Image 1 (tube, rainbow, N blue to C red):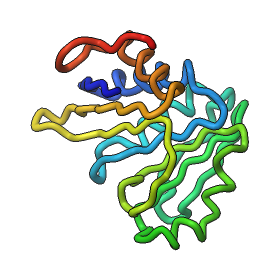
Image 2: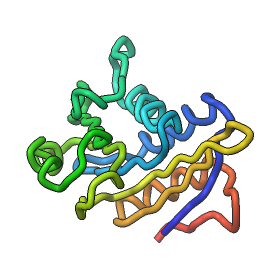
Image 3: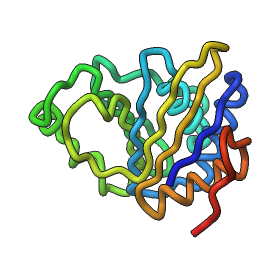
Image 4: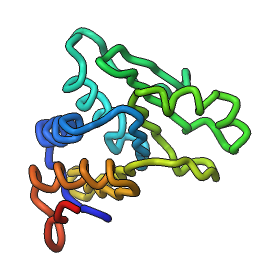
Length: 166
C-alpha cells in the first residue's frame, strides 16, 4: 500500500513526524530513502521529539557513527547506511541487535546496500523544484499500513484518494 503527500515547510514535516509517532509500536522498522538534504534526519528528529520526554536531546545524523541510540519509552535506534556498501558491512554493525528488541529502528539510506532488510514502512523524500518535500509512504506490514493510514488522515493526498484502514 502506498500514499503520496507533500511537506511545504518544517512545520508540516513536524506534523507528519507527530502523526507517525502517534501510532508507532515496538519492533517497528522504517526505511528512509532520499538524497542528501532531503529531510530524512529532520523527519527522524521530529518523530523522536514526539516520543521522548527529554526535549534537550539533539537528534543528529549517524553518518559517521553508523548507529545512534536515543532514550525514550522504547529503545530508539537511528541507523545510517550511507557509508556501507555491502550486506557484509551491514551485518558487521550487528543490525540484528537493533531490531526485535521492543524498540523502533529508523534506517537512512536503506536502499544503499543490496540486502533484504525486513521493514514495516519505507518513507521516500524527494526535494521538488519549489523546495518542498514530496513524501511517499510504502507499507509492507499491518503495522506499516496503520501508520500510513494515520498519516493519510492527517495530511492532504497528492494524487488519488486516501487509503482506507484494513
